[in-house]
Amino acid sequence: MTLTPSRLLSVVVVGADYLRAWSIPLSAWYVTVLAVPLLILIWFPAALDDVTYGIWYKGYRVDSHTPAIVIAAFGWTLLLAFTACLFSPRILTVAIAR
Image (cartoon, rainbow, N blue to C red; front, side, top):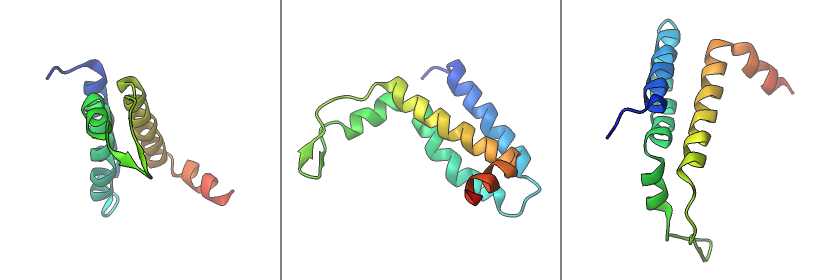
């Protein structure tokens, strides 16, 4: 397994999330629960595609592969959204108020 820039940057972002959440009670637990699945999406997109390829869903078989870049981009989008909410709680309150 190679350490690509995407993987390294994701670890840096999660590290910043932990530093931000350090002073908030139970936030380190929330960061762990949310960040680990997102890191799996970023670090192992091809493996996740192999797991889901060929399974049956609502009577239909998944018979096409999802590009790894799409899976990783989805993980990055969610990780950056989570980080934005953690660093600027106003984003979350504005989104909930609407």
